[in-house]
Length: 318
Image (cartoon, rainbow, N blue to C red; front, side, top):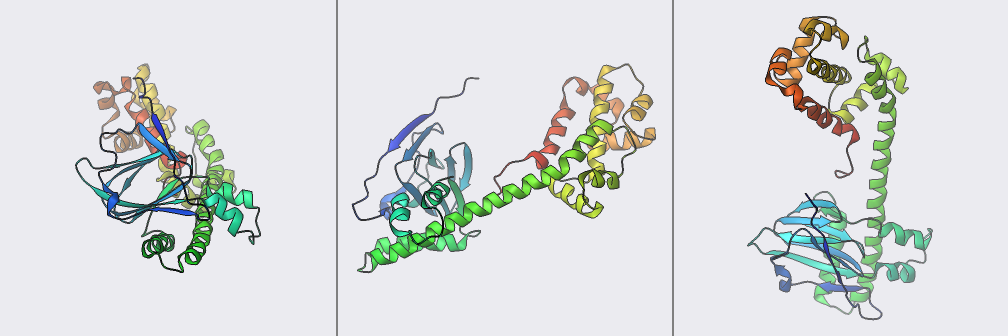
């Protein structure tokens, strides 16, 4: 099926000279967002957009990522990042927005920073995201404080906003640093496991002990067990048996070997152990699996891929 073409709209905002924020707040922003539009109707802005959901439920798309939003979720979307917000059809939500000339603010008001200004700007604009007030209360408080200052329009507004924007930039930098730290941690764990995963793939039919896998990874056995279970959502020997059963399914599909031959071929010491592990993973016996024709559908291969997602998985919980 051909992918539907995206319709991307550029929405330009003009921030008054000498200011850094254009607020879009109040009851005018109680809307059914995305009405008459589809997921392919996206847009981007010439300034960073900070959005705060006062109430509502729906879906938010930032580049190629989808989020389910609800009350007290907020977004940080740099300039030129495509996105869209879509309410549940027939429902109105309230979002309030701040369009921020963050590049100019950093260049003009954060010259006292010990870091390279252009590098700071690059980091702040590196990625759009949605967060929750529950998980990021301080960042949410800063955003709500900026909205409050824009609403009350006092004689101290400009000074207060500069201080709050300074804090906002720092917290966005910390958010990106936290994400990068988690990505590095995941990559480090995966690098520890890669050699043992490859070893299992080549030697599944041999007598494999967790201590051997830990030694291959350069870890203590207890540390290896913990990292493996956290990354793969299963114990090391459960993974070994899964690989063995996966290979057994391939041999059953060929149809030229007995079940006893297959059991020994893939590394099980007894036929009963083979039957027990096969049923545990597939829900049926090897013979039932063969008679059902599942060997032609690749159903266990799909199960195998799903189980490995814990190791190969991406960022979004980060």
